[in-house]
Length: 176
Image (tube, rainbow, N blue to C red; front, side):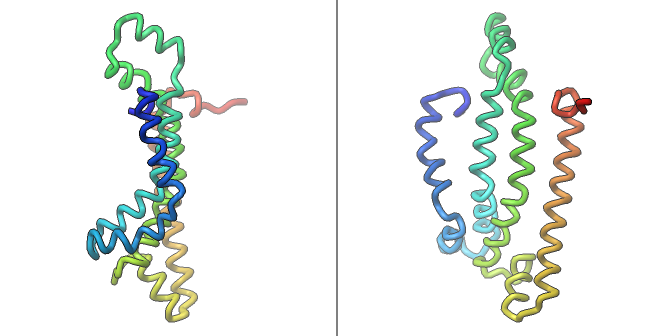
């Protein structure tokens, strides 16, 4: 909606800037009080860590359309829905995949912080916190390694999906 309307962008941008300026890790205890010791606060913290970079890239991507293609679609009286699905969305995919690769690591950080505060008795965040309190360095490094492995595998999966979905896009061709 922000890409389609400057009014909506101007109305929502202060909230986005506020979220960006807020220390998200400090919200974990508040979310625990509101939602209890469930998965919800952990997911919210992970999502908030990744939200701002994703929105910024998505907004840029939805606006980065070819002006001539846009004018052509308008000249044939294409609806906003058709312009979105046939022009804006395909044009935004490289930006969305780029945001996804950036946000994988941020979401992992958010998930670990959510587990630090979440009173978890399972999960890698709990394992990391437990090993830290017992000074078990090899378990700390093991947890860090597994988290990094999850990030690498997820990023590689996103890159493979991007190569497959965007085989038509210039970003997927090698320049010589």
